[in-house]
Length: 196
Image (tube, helix red, strand yellow):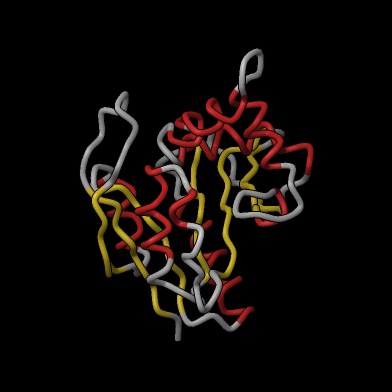
């Protein structure tokens, strides 16, 4: 029997689970970066957990809504408004795989950006993603932003179909620069959903 999810703001206590969901959404790229940041004797997920515990930043529990089924977190949404104008001055200092993503973000200034939307495998296909995207739209409307935006890999056709069904349209692409161990290839696609 499938239980209906409840939605709530994330708390500090959710940080470890959020780091796993962030890595799922980023298809392993966050773990790759966190491992580089961790240094000897430390876990990549420790770094992810600490980043989720921050009060500010693109990946912070304060920007996160979780979907919970029973006592378990099933999925999450991390989102916030993008700066307008968008500042690209630090682009050259970023790890190369993240530069195409930031260039795409810069093409959607002032939108409410869905940085992370992810569900654990056993909770997929139950409509939670669409409900989280509705929450994103509600937040965007409350803040008066003109649109919501999201970036998806061209190889992630299931997610791209979900976003299209929810009213998102592809507006720009950048070739993905992925770490050598990654099997995916293709483009990052910026999708935007204008709001009325």
